[in-house]
Image (cartoon, rainbow, N blue to C red):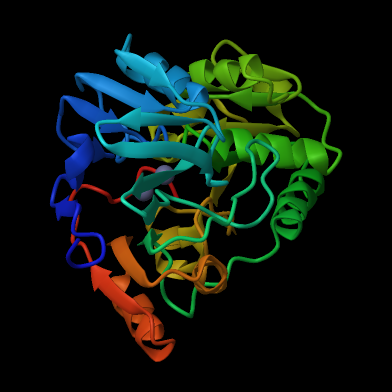
Length: 332
Ligand SMILES: [Zn+2]
Ligand SMILES: [Zn+2]
């Protein structure tokens, strides 16, 4: 065999695994797709056949309808063409997986999106030593350091309790972040009902069906204004500033995102209470993960590649940018 990983070919629309004749997270419909997780920039509809975890397949079914689905649970493996394929947790959202590809004695791990800190809604990231580690770099700059999640949740609760005649409206992505914020609030002892925007309903129900308890949730639609005073309301970021929020009692606008570290992003969305809660690794998590995985090569898919490339060079790890398109995230 020639160069390391010569059987893996990156294209702008995804990673092609030649001896399996299959694609990882393709952004266009393909005959065979291996999907790391349910976010729209990784999971698309319309593939001939999909291999993913049962949870990811359930999420895809909610979003795209019935798929030709091949469930592969964490720790299981399947043979596709000449490649042994297995899935292990990535700690990003429910069902998110790193995909392990073994072929002729070489091991490639495609991590998809991942984080290292605990998340009550999904299984924690598993370190898998490999020859080539394919990583994202969404927050791949040393300035990105996500604070402790519990302290961000406490800031939210403090603000809620300080002005009981108002509500706090939290913008959070409908898949993953919304359920995580709810579960983190429960973990901090917040037992009151949480109101949600209609766009959250199906995914919140699915999380509960798949065994992630979220406590008492109520639709904001149809609820009286006074009833929501002193409560938390969760909506997709796009609904933060639209007409929909006029039905709420004088909302304090919050948003849960890794990007809230950047003041300008918070200001753009008129966010009064920025909460730095991310489903991606920060700089320390990215570099710690690469150290622990100890690959011979690092391939970087999306995000801020330059600083991570440079860091790998200093560690004498060969690194390469893949320049995939279409991965700018639904999630953060
Ligand atoms: Zn994602
Ligand atoms: Zn992504």
